Image (tube, rainbow, N blue to C red; front, side, top):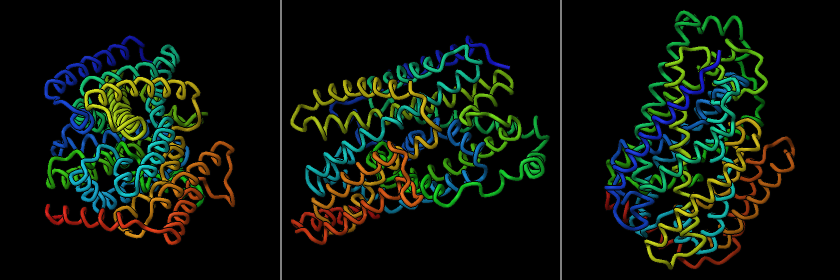
Length: 483
């Protein structure tokens, strides 16, 4: 059974109206300057900070990509995502106070700008280029997820590309209208919508198709015991998981969220609320993937598991869940667009233009990025979950440089620049040629070479002493604020 296209179009129209209303409300609160446009004046409370962090992280990847990954790989996907949750919380505990303090001391807008403060201009430029190149696929995933949903839920009556275009259009409305204040407010709403709608769907599936949660467990155990075993080899698990383990540091759209909390209390609440949200949403998504594997076996494309599942539930429920996924995709794409536009405008184009012109430049970059994402999404490449991991694998090469910025005074500018540039090229080449030397995925080789180059070059080149000053200033700011 497929849904009538008119209902889905009406649902998207409804969300469009919500977006416009929230964006207009946010615009009235919008102050002047790029700091206000990109970071909401660094004045977000704990709950909104957590929701914008969660919404930026969890999008089509979860309810389409992770469901599909669980459909094809079983409970191994749970280990993959839980590893990400645990690492993210640990990294936030250690690094969120440092990012937040650095933003106050140096007034940085973007994560590459932070690296420029620590290592010099060249390191910031290399980081900015990596972010822009690697995040095009990740942004396109948000469009692809909705495209798959619309096509699958309507039996092809709504073409895949219609979903791609609609997400692109609405993401422009979210970001260009009022910047971070609009993104943060819509993030908070859509995070609640997607969590509640996903939970309702899971309960419906459990009680209608399996009789109860216990019935679900019994059915899976008897009819699909293979899904409860380890179906991934170790190399695959490490290759997929490693980029996500460092996601909080290396993906600029989330590390930039460490700049926006208004105070220490808000920052700590952001970490706690995100951990709770992420744990619950991961469990829901993987359980839906296992349910789909039992109810609709044999799908050629695992990413169609959620679209097909939504055609098996009442139309109203299907529409509500679709709206949650659609809203998540729009909001996540808007968040990444806002971050990348600020990176393009500040770290690559010019730091010597007026704040008003920089905001206009950011808006123009947003339009160009959306066009690039539409082109990429039109290719319909690979599993969504694998695409997301590939994008993060390219960003992973920045991990040693970011960690060392706060902890290793001897680390040098040459080490930071080279250890990001060369491994970045290696990762792109390996993925492009579909190569896995010695059976290890590109992410592993990227991190190994980045770490080795960062350490070796730092030990063999002369430090200018900026590292010690940077680390000491951050520590003093942390001490002053009670971290």
